[in-house]
Length: 562
Image 1 (cartoon, rainbow, N blue to C red):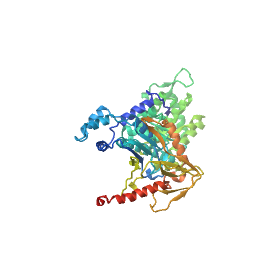
Image 2: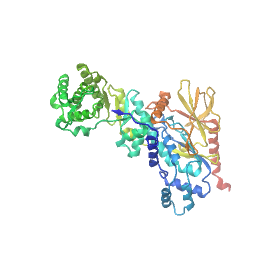
Image 3: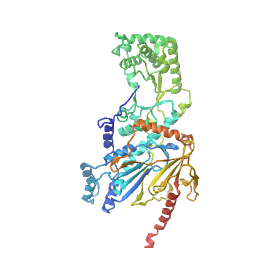
Image 4: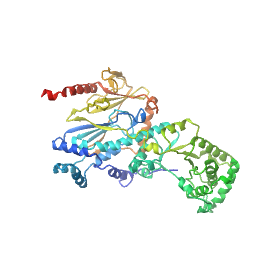
């Protein structure tokens, strides 16, 4: 069913292909026009080289849940390293920017790169929460402004689908394998590739997407569709009709005759009516079994599971076992998956016991039928025998919430903090360059993320601290907490044109995700009505916010004062 994928790091292998793919998916022109008009205005005013810092964060945890996963960092690193406008890019910009744009600005763009940009970030695959800064992008004002849309594009969907996959994993439980099969339902080729990559990182085990397997080393899986089954009508279409035994016996065996004998015995065992068996379905199973005798896993509901598909599978699988091959299992793609899987498993056990075939006790049952998070959770509560669940549409399209809503906001210019003050308190920002610390209790569960000014001393384990949880009334008193452990969430990921935090392969990031989720307290990762996780500002940062708000009110009278 599944095949391992290469993860070579050579320039001509998957790593090199991945970087070329990123340059094609996200060139510097993949941005909004107003980024260029703002950059020009900064340049025209002589402000384009002023040091500035932006932060990327989201305001609400997705899917009504208590957490998200941060993803897309590696693509951001590659984007920054390859950020450069070509002559063709600049020639096009001449045609879309207003005619008043000075020619020298286009030369400025042509010479631009990210050698002066520094990216500090939460590690990829980390559990994160609303309002916590995920990335800080610092550098020349015009450059870091130009990066906004592209970085948001690379992080928003990656983090959303990764979080969605993690929720499916929580709903499925740790035992059952999950197969991502949403490429055909995705929003275009890039959406499909991104979904496959980050669904795997979020907790899925397999993908049907061959390109994702090549680029990211994800195990790929798949056998046959209903169209293959229904393309056959008669056993006369099976060719070749013979199969040599796996043990190396030189004389090939007539697999059709062998299977017919087993089919009669299976019908007798189950009291089934041979007249209802579809000959075309049996021909399809035989043809595929001859092509791939070690990978036999057909879909068995093209017609009727109980009257045809299951009987045909058992007959072909028993014939393969007699020739020393090991069939893999079946896929169910319609109807009541739970009850059908129980019936199928019962038949497998009957056949295994009656015919003394041990392989029948370990056959896989794959279920797929428009699976959503809700139906996954319901499936986990019911009696069933499903080993692998295939998920497509509801995973890759994130039907419960189509966007994470990450934003990219200015927090400092020329060393001075900047803050957006909105009539909607939810849209106000937190000023200044910052550090972020995760506080854990004695059991190792995170209970608070503390956002501090960059210049502040870090909190210490065992030492009480006062802070101001976000979401409370501004006049509320500070709260006191004593962490058992403290972890810094910020790492430098890019500086002076180079990636400074080497990326992990997808399998390593996937493992980090599971570790990160395991440390999270169950009350915060409940799929329904989770407890809110606390994000708080340090006393100094809270004081800065208060002072800027007060100063903003005073500044509103500047016209009268002059």
